[in-house]
Image 1 (cartoon, rainbow, N blue to C red):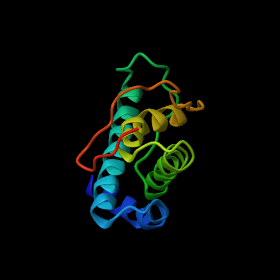
Image 2: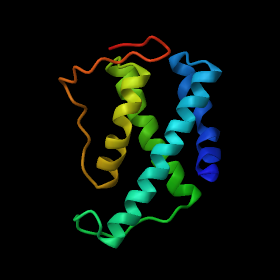
Image 3: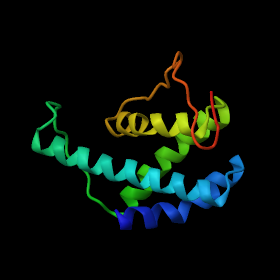
Length: 127
């Protein structure tokens, strides 16, 4: 996981500066991205072993390029969910794992339109 967080740290400054995210928030989000990416590799391994009931199609190696590709998917959806749809960061992070898995499975992710969950974190964000 340290390798993944190191790779995601490299990209995070350019992504989050446009959203006015402070250094403390950036570190938290970068760790969340790292956790989401690590979990996606674990899911890939479970799929390879046939533990999910899904059809196994290839798999992925944990390379810097693959980590960067997954980070780019998370960045893309963060830009859409926060920038275009005006979701809070908390709500966005809650949906990013689904967005990443959907994209990795070769499908198009569609954000839920009627997500009425309340989002209030230490930052006081809600949406």
